[in-house]
Amino acid sequence: MVGYSHYLILSAVLFTIGVFGVLLRRNLIIIFMSIELMLNSVNLSLVAISKFTQSADGQIFVFFVITVAAVEAAVGLAIIISLFRHKQTTAIDEINLMKG
Amino acid sequence: MWHNIIFWILSILCVGCALGVVWQRNPVVSAVFLVGSFVALAGLYLNLNAPFLAAIQIIIYAGAIMVLFVFVMMLLDLHHPLDLYFRFTKPKLPKYIVLGLFIWLLCTLILATAFPLAIPDKAQGFTVAQVAILLFSKYAFPFELTSLLLLIALVGGVVLAKKK
Image (cartoon, rainbow over all chains, first blue to last red; front, side, top):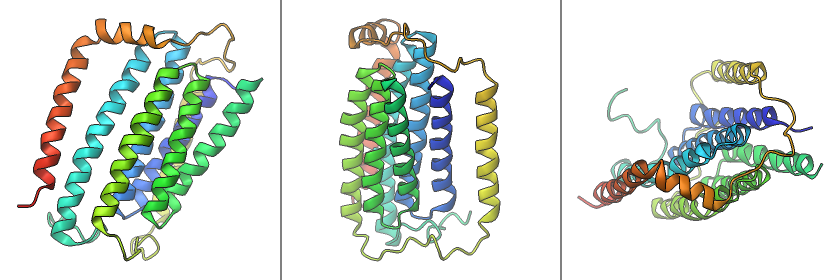
């Protein structure tokens, strides 16, 4: 029988895959996609808990998270474009202007 | 019964597509896998009686955001395939250990909570009308702030991406 715990564990697995992408990939665009994956996994747990508590507030939060994800994608991709114009690459090893 | 079968099919699809996103070397193929993962998640939302969010997930994520990603990939002209995933100088093992610890911690915490294992059949979802009433009454102010955020993103995107 599938319960709320299954949804939450699925959400945890997806979040970990997203963290994996951010830690181990070095292409800026794929790192961005992994961040979207993490946002989505949190959305899944919010929807499951919204059904568990029988209140629609969780769904409103998901609505706002999706809006912020769209905003983040727009601004982040604009930054990637201007970086690419500067350095001609999307590999994060090559982007070391700040010497971090 | 059907709830269980649909959950297992969609969750396997979702995790498989997510792994495809992080394992693929070609960013365009990763984007296609990400769309698959989003569609599977929309199915899971339907399974949880949240039809409004399933529609939003398809329209905004799989539609708008992924088109933006693919569009930017077209602009960037990534002809050399080169994700340097395999030419890795730093040791990877600590990262795998950290990831394993992370998922172990999350699963332990989830299993320690009091969420009942079975979803009761009487649990109802929410219709679009219920979500909308809540959004325009209790959350009206954050909703208006969202429009300001979108305006800022619009201006910021244009300023950042335009030629100097």
